[in-house]
Image (cartoon, rainbow, N blue to C red; front, side, top):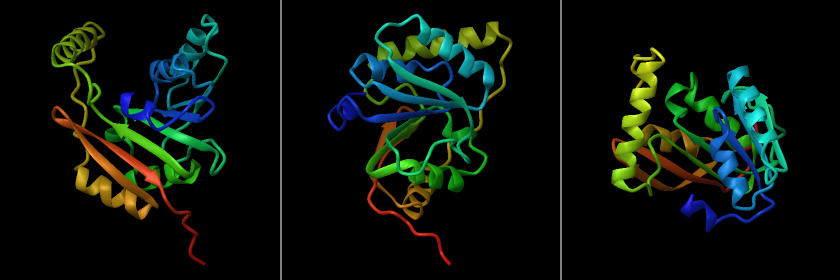
Length: 190
């Protein structure tokens, strides 16, 4: 959030891809961003996010929609920032997903996509969050291991081929975050 707050200002349009119940989008709105879209595969997550937003007066223009990373239901070149935490390793087609992110981003738009608890999160807080999350998943009966993250070198290559310039790869414990910017508009081959 700290890295992004230096880059963006209120009024920018944001997509939270695989955003669950919309906590990231809420955090941006509390910092002055007023237009955001949550895209998640699960109807229940979108429903819960909308329910949460109804009770918050400072969240004016948030929209939730069912969709996936390979076919984002948003018009081309209309978004300034795409964020996604803890979903990239679940995308079925990494190349198509990054092409979709590039498609919806405006020229100069940014993608901040990663896995972990945030590169700027204090170590003690990180461990507390991990412990509580593990306990919650066990209570829910979800003990299955998630797939590993794709190698950051592969993601960097895919970003470049989609028309995004990787500005930074940020380590986050055993994971990483990709901070990329759309520098060009790729034309489809004829």
